[in-house]
Length: 191
Image 1: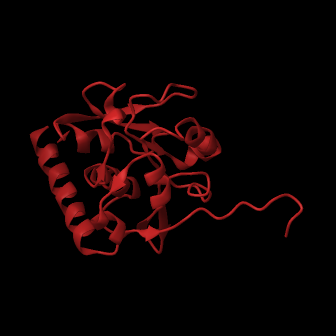
Image 2 (image 1 turned 135 degrees about the vertical axis):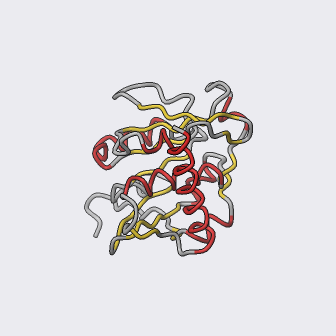
């Protein structure tokens, strides 16, 4: 167990270096896509400030909730024993229709893309960092969207959505992201 923790810590440290020194992408040569995304989720938590009310209903932990789980326990291993602002990190898997109170971050997996708009609407006014992959994720109100191009993972951030729910994203993280805004919705019958 200790050997794995050291390897996970080394992987997280490598991602931290990448976050600090590259253009928000990671090559897939040495790590699987979801290992990289799990490390990104962990690091996103370190570069966002949540208002106090984000923890009022959830207890003493910082909880990353998963709607769909492509991580194969990788995220659990990365956050095991980790603490953020004196709060132990936890991973919780959300069942369909489950209450999302107590989540500080929600990752919506690509296999849950059909539920993405429903989940985003359910947490629309809550201080929850939403992360997803679907093409319309940002347009539906999501905050961070993973995209994969040329074997690399990049991410987009919608700072307006973060501000709307009182989350403060570090300028350092914003510099690494592609800043995007939702596309205006067209009215029916208007070209």
